[in-house]
Length: 219
Image 1: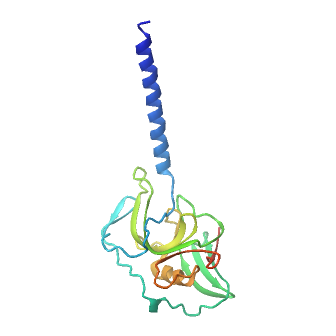
Image 2 (image 1 turned 180 degrees about the horizontal axis):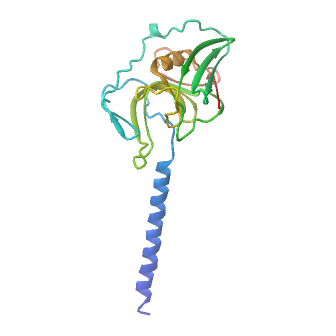
Image 3 (image 1 turned 90 degrees about the vertical axis):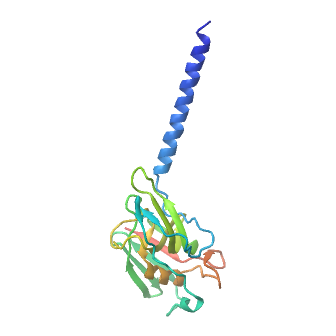
C-alpha cells in the first residue's frame, strides 16, 4: 500500500510530461507551417513608424517609403469594360494582365519557393494599399516581418499578389507562397484590377456588386 502514492505521482508525472511534449511538438509543427502572406493591418495606410523589416531571419535596415497615390494618380489609362483577368505562369515566373483581346501589362514575378503558390482559378477577394505581414519560423531561417507591404491583392485566403521591397530577384521563386512583383507593377495592377477601390478608401473587399478580377495560375 505504501507504493500507491509514489506510483500515482510517477504515472501522473509521466502523463503530464507526455502531454507537455505533445503540445510542444504540435506548437513547433504549426509554427513551421507556411502561412503565405496574411495581412495584419486594418487601416491600409503607410506606417512611417515602422523602420525595420526582417526577411528570412535577416534584418533590412531601411524600408523605402512607399507612398499611396492621391486620387489624381489613380487613373488607369486604357481602362474599359472589357473582361479583365490575370494570368500567372509559374514555370516562366511571369504575370500577364489581360483586358479583352489586349494585354494591359506583363511583368516578371517571384512565386512561392518552399511553399508553392497554388495553381487554379480564383478571384481577388480583398485589396489593401499597405499592410504588415509576418510569418515563417526563426528556427529554420524562414521568419519574416514586413511592414508596409505595398499594393496587396489576395486571391485565395492569405495568398496574394503584392509589391516587393526586400528583394529584386524577379524571375525566380523567392516568396513564402505569395506572388512577389516589382512595386511599380503592383501599383498599376492594384488600381486596374477589381474590386474597385471606393473613393477615399485604402482597402476593399469584393462583393456581388463589386466582384474581384479573375486570377488564373498554372505551371
